Length: 376
Ligand code: MTE
Ligand code: MO
Image (cartoon, rainbow, N blue to C red; front, top):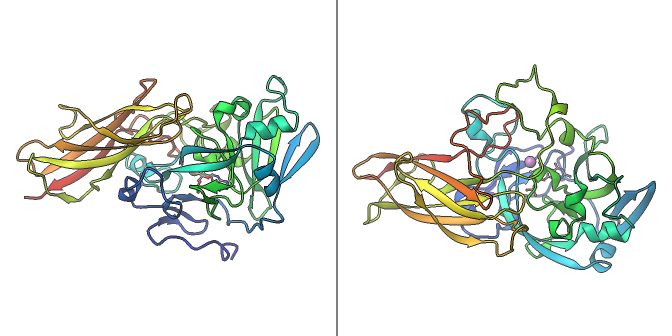
């Protein structure tokens, strides 16, 4: 069993698959703290967790036919160490809701395949400049990452990001060796992972073994034939993965973390209920508003943003947590709660999943709707 040496996990993580291990925490735990605790942070592994010893670890960086090697010590001592707060979210977060429209291929995620952490390490841009990469070099277009996890045919997990994002010091791409101030855990990429703030989880390559400075995208399955969006009418007979760009920056999203769907809620004296959730947008865009309604949009209320990343745009990489005491229509026994967020570019979420459905179940950012009962 290639998974026999996987690490132990927190009992609160609910697996959607055990081998490879994929799991998310109960949504209500996400709004307990602005920084998601490491052991409650969702885990998305495609392969067994590799066993890497700190002293043998080497990061190879390939550029113009040459390999440059860095030990963990090199990465810690040769470069300025920076800490960024960044949310990491799986492209398939909220896939379960999309599946209600029509089945899709993919893990059945709820709305907690997302977390917010601080990440510490050298900037990728500093490492690239150190080996002589010039930001104006037209032959450099993509930075490819390879993990030290591989499949039975020895193919590693791989992905790439645009060179512009990688070389921009304000892009804040970090070769992280710490998460929330602690040594990176095995599930989250020990000893080094790429953290690509504002960009889909899939490009935040864990167990980073090799970086390739290239004129082309990664040719990995995950870059070429997965993690792409399509027209809702495209099916597995007609899909042509070469026609859609790989997902990089993610669109604006929000979700209600409490109350939970199906729960029975007692109203407070003002005939209202407390509702909490998260909101986030990719590309360093800040959340400027979270709108919620308990009457299908007749009356919208703006929630209070209770905690927000203090970093300025365009590198506002962390999520926002929100809360509101939302008035509920008099005398009703059941309510559908809705939430939608607005980012600083005034992008907002689509109303329903019907017209954003896609065969891989990615980019599921429709209004979040939660049905609850009111206690009498
Ligand atoms: N990196 C490697 N090496 N192998 C993987 O399977 N999964 C990716 C990404 N990096 C993956 C990886 C995906 S799809 C996501 S969503 C994030 O890691 C999940 O990061 P986390 O497990 O730390 O939450
Ligand atoms: Mo993912």
